[in-house]
Length: 121
Ligand SMILES: [Zn+2]
Image (cartoon, rainbow, N blue to C red; front, side, top):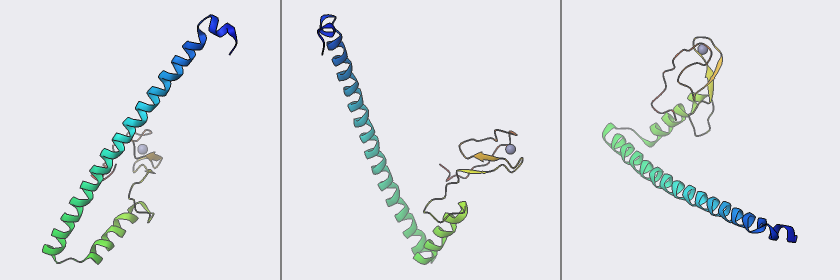
């Protein structure tokens, strides 16, 4: 580093800035890791509850695991793709037929209000 930078204190300011950036990045990464862990625990609990509910329905309702798998496939195909998900990204507006995103509650073109499924993200 040229003496010019040391002379005017730019070296230490730059190093301090880099250190602060590194600290913020580390904190951000740590917080993201904590959120992922919380989501994993929440997902594990949700899966356990789904399993318990399925076993209650199966055992008390006379259904079989084959019935469940058939229903899962039926629901999976509602978005047109058998991919383990049922989340449509875009669809034609029922009023104006323009393609719209599921992120919006209303059509951006004509204002039509969409009725979303309880299970849409
Ligand atoms: Zn529309």
